[in-house]
Length: 355
Image (cartoon, rainbow, N blue to C red; front, side, top):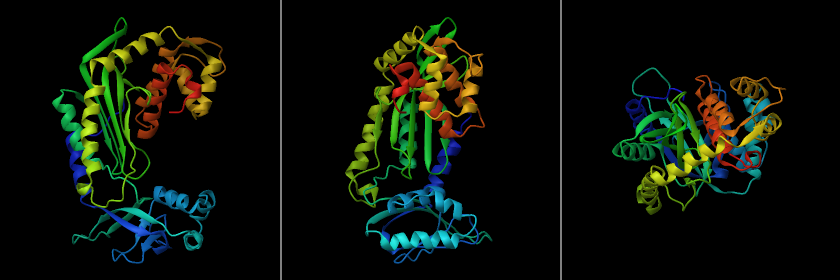
């Protein structure tokens, strides 16, 4: 697995960042886009807000275009040439659109006497029914629960908007082959900006190479979409309290011996299940594995692209999940290979199932 963040430091960063996060309910037609001469993306301002302008991000620009039902390819081509042209196009379609209420999620650092400029960022534009399940709540409640259960935190990663925690239960383990020991685990992911649900699912940790495998979503997986009633203060939302309770119960379920037995049996079965090189290529294409990544996977099998061979699903899954150990690979891409490995092991036909 990749090297993650120190847990205590991560929690401090999450709690500090939370102080600088704001949410507003705004009308689409109250939004105006203007040039930003400092950053790579234009600014967003709202008529009735006195907080000033917020710099768009790549993500919030995508979301705005999605709400306006316009493509992003042309605007991206315009960005390095003329933000004024980008702003003109966006404002045109904002004026043409039906008015709708949105949740604007921002990150704002106020001046503290330092010479640095105030940071004001529009990090997300979500539906007004977006249910906030924020990283400070998920991290604090889940980490306390995992530690109470005696689990070992193997990986923790936070980038202000997304969260990824992986823990291992060293008391639940099995031997796939002699000396090839695997342990039961739990992986928890969350996004605050509409790029993913809160997801808790089984994880398998291989000691010999520290590979990590995420069990497919249909196996004892819990997720909560960020959709609910209109609410701006989550402390007043019964759904919010319910999610915390469900999250802790799901951790207990995934950490159970029954779930581990099911996962371990899937690994044992995969040793006997064969997959050939043609099927591997089709699988890679189906799931968006690039040609260079495909070559890396084949190399981990001591093969070259173009070779004709047959291997077990277990060996292929280990080659795929090992891709997630590369420190130069993004967190989201590493997670992708962990999930693809789980799909290879547990799905009857992994080429026909989406991650």
